[in-house]
Amino acid sequence: MTEGHYSGHHFKSEMKAEYKSTVSLGISYLGLSLSASLNPAKMMGKYHDYELNFKYYGKRFGFDLSYQESKNFTGWKEMDDEGRVDLPADMLSVKMLNINAYYCFNSRKFSYPSAFSPNYIQRRSAGSFLLSLSGQGQRGTVYDEVPMKFKMTNIGVGGGYGYNYVPRKGWLFHISALPTLIVFSKTSLTISETEVPLHYYFPEVIITGRGAIVKQAGRMFFGISGVYNFCNIGNKERLAVDNIKWNARAYVGIRL
Image 1: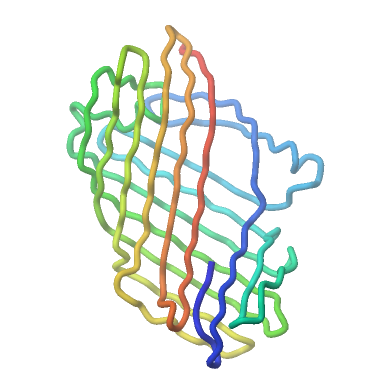
Image 2 (image 1 turned 90 degrees about the horizontal axis):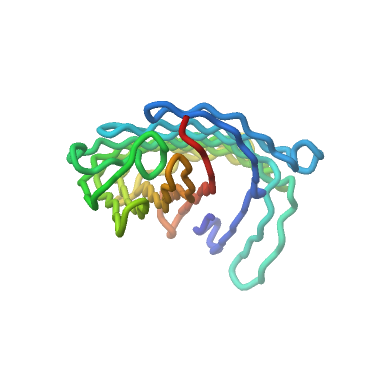
């Protein structure tokens, strides 16, 4: 999502990539998981984007990494009071890298991986303060009447809190929020052949939220989990860019 002013005119726009649905089979050991995923839509030639995810959740330290190349965006734009105009699907191409890491201060009682990995089980409710580091890099091209290219690299440092609620044996509810303040920002916009640097405006943030519900039933386990990433840079008086990326999954497994 973008909002700002250009040549005295106010504008807003929003572009969304296609949803991706996959079916996966995996094996996990001590918080490290290896899986193979199948995207039915891609096999039928209906999905052309590319995404790679890697996650490691340990008791004291963990991170998740995602890389995505997207070309099939749909959206709209508004300029002053001219009304909303739909944008073509082949107008935007983006390559994006997201990295989020945490450090847990109460790893003896609070198990972060128990919400996302079947190798750990939280038996009593507990929470912990968390130190967090976030990074996001983007490279994109807008194929408009006046072609534009943008580059964004942002690194944020901050902290948050996570809590595992165990209402009864075999159940776990997890929620955590890790806001970070961007401490390094390098952003540029190239219109035609002219490069326009985009200055840092305090505060700019990257926020990572996670949630999960897990049910243990003997050797079987079931769950749903999700990761939400939000990044805000710039200033609406000139150019502000908001990025949202989320991932959700439902799973069932058995311990060997």
